[in-house]
Image 1 (cartoon, rainbow, N blue to C red):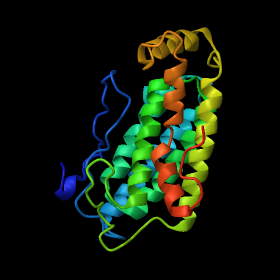
Image 2 (cartoon, rainbow, N blue to C red):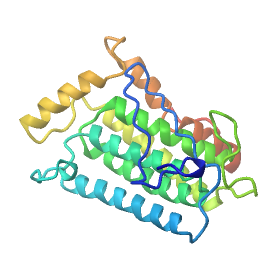
Image 3 (cartoon, helix red, strand yellow):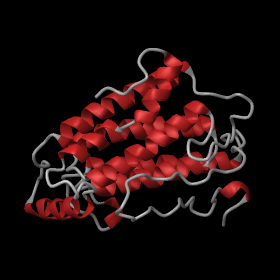
Image 4 (cartoon, rainbow, N blue to C red):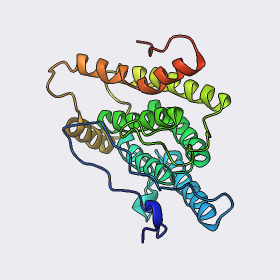
Length: 249
């Protein structure tokens, strides 16, 4: 049952993912009206649940070439698609907390893992770009202290709490490295595959979810989506840290 501010305590369920194939631009769920109180039972439960969710993702990644288990939710990832969907649910859950200290810490953790997984799992473009766009919106919003889409002040920022200089440097490093990883993966002719089963699965998922079907070559759309990776965040960091505020091409 959802309590005040939209935080869901029963199972900490995050909003369902959109399956609209016509767009890869996501929307973050609306956060709680008030941040979780530091040291409260709700905060403790939230932290434990997010950590458990991230641990499950890491175990599935570690078992990406292993045998399937009895529980499908614990099977190793065979492409970026299920990994990205799991990450997206965690990002939504983190955002709903409306607690900047937790949002920044956990989103940095998630973004770093995503950056690490991009070159090591068979690609799934729509899932990848949607997840990165959602992380981009989240980081840019936190850097501004207001919701990038609605313009509303974010919970916890009313008192002037902002992203620290150290956190900004970490965000920029992850954004830059993620862009490099995406360029590398998208320039590969075919994803790396470990088995015929993975090849069949990835070929189907790649074709079904490819958001760049209108261009026979796909090159212009790929270039556009690659250029958008963390572009809002990089522009915002350029304004705050100094230097160029345009993402590298």
